[in-house]
Image 1 (tube, rainbow, N blue to C red):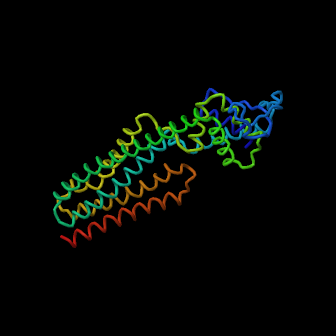
Image 2 (spheres, one colour):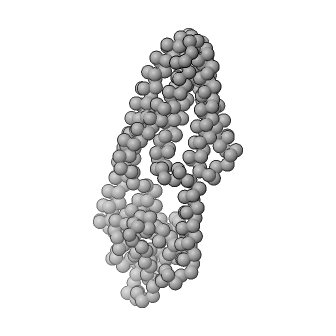
Length: 308
């Protein structure tokens, strides 16, 4: 991809109302003490400018980039409209909810009392959902605090010495493509200098690889993880409400959980990888979930049986 296409993509992503304009400067990079004249010298000629509209490579790269993104959006389908972090939180909550309460109820069933299974299972389910929700809240809060600290640090650096920020941008561009010419880097930096906040956003997103957490991220994360745990954990308990024999309840719970774990693993692969995930991979993920849940439930049943 050419510089122009990269520049347009970055600027449009960081600030949709700004478009990149490129200027041709001297190849004397990091020269001078004036941050506004980054990479320039006294013989700088401002008459030579790149015309994006007349650059066939830029236009082709721009079209290719748009087509690729459109195709990617179509592949992801419904899941493209959901925050990936919410999907991740939901997977965490469901995976724990489907395995831990299942293992606990299987272990308690070895005591031979369905009332103990239901009571103990609900106690663990409520406490586990609260604990998982609090963990999600604290994790999201720490993420937000770290993001704010990084932004504050970069903003302080910018106003203390703009040249340091210019060098950070240069390092980011060279990490993207070490073959970028000095003129290319200088042109990109001079465009970003028109908007200090845009330059800071660029460094945070592409240099520190941080995205600004969504509004109310802590509450959403807590509700998603806790709710996922509660939803997944209620499933292995359901059969015990409809049978009198605890052994029968365990048998039906195993059947229900085998099907549920496979379905969860199957669709977890879909949510994680989209339509690029093959059918074989989806089946493997489903079988892996069955093995993990089965191993946990079997171990719990065995040790409770031995200790009981």
